[in-house]
Amino acid sequence: MNAAPALSDAARARVVEVFSSLQGEGPRVGERQIFVRLGGCNLRCDYCDEPDTIAIPSGTVWTAERLRGAIARLSARRRHRSISWTGGEPLLHPLFLRGMMAWARGRGLKNYLETNGTLPAALASVAGLCDTVSMDFKLPSSTGRDFWSAHERFLAVAPRGTFVKVVLTARTTDAEWRRVLSILRAAPRRVALVLQPVTAGFGAEPIAPARCLRLEARARRVLREVSVIPQWQHLWGVR
Image (cartoon, rainbow, N blue to C red; front, side, top):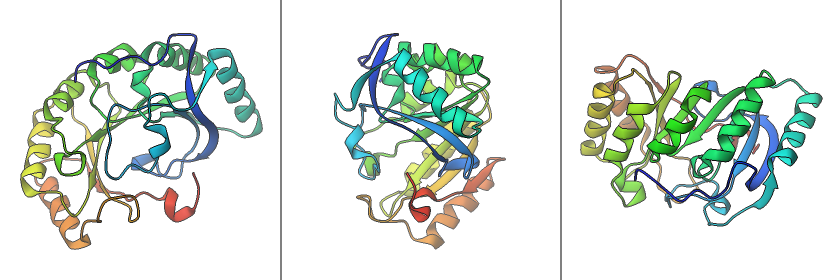
């Protein structure tokens, strides 16, 4: 899991949509951002709430110039603090992402990267341009695959401002949770942990609230920054 085929170059990439909305996950819930959803993903998670972005290829080819124009128009309509680079998996577009992140910084916009946490080499190429990294921990019970070592390598190059989000389902096991906590305790940089109970209706059975809170209590015994934050965008009815 060190590498994945890049889906674009520095001048163009496959874009699914660009829009202004409120961040619905993690510590920045409710913050207005410009969302750039890039096409294609290297994983197939049971609970994915953007299944149309998984296929390779998905979206349409945009030039960097076209995307800069779309971002500039959204910025002119209302104030935004940051751009959420999301997908799909945005780190499948490292060259394009690096150029666009540098341009965004020049316009005074912060870079918020949403990633599945399995492509450490691609992260290393853009880490210095990221202000926030929302890194998923993908559990075998919901993905059918083991990504522990990829997550460890990802954390080794993760910049300051990274937090880890774990989507919890009814199939999440105690052994998986012990592994999550062990990896985070050993990480070279302290990161916050967000427990995200899976949203009903997206392909996985939700975790029982009482069990989610037991996992949260266990995490608080070993980590400093722990929170439970469900997905709010679906409750709000926004993208």
